[in-house]
Image (cartoon, rainbow, N blue to C red):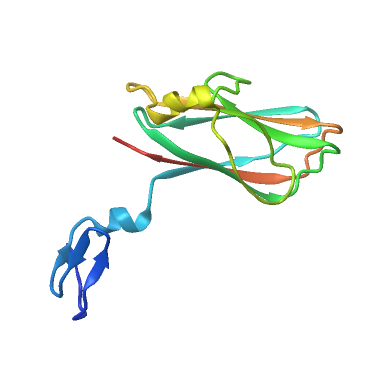
Length: 152
């Protein structure tokens, strides 16, 4: 069922004007924003590295990758994240610190941008995520990886 404007005002946006009584189709798709996938990230006291894998839809365009560190990581020196197209790779995102409790918007590696702009069609593609602790290893800390993309 299409949404209907119920006020006698003009809804305007650059390039969009809808007079009273107009119907909006597919409003839900716009209201919800771009598709996202989330992945919980953690470290262990037993290892300096923690590896994760996330499948993304074939042919998607990856718009952004953010890390929300809710509980600061306890490693004595640093905790970094790298993302690649193979295990322990960094083809898409070079090692970036996520130790502190904060939101970090990850920068794409220049040579990986073309691949992120059009993940190969066919089977879902994997992002290989590696957390690396330097200094002492600890299980303290938690973060969430958020990948925002559009699909064809």
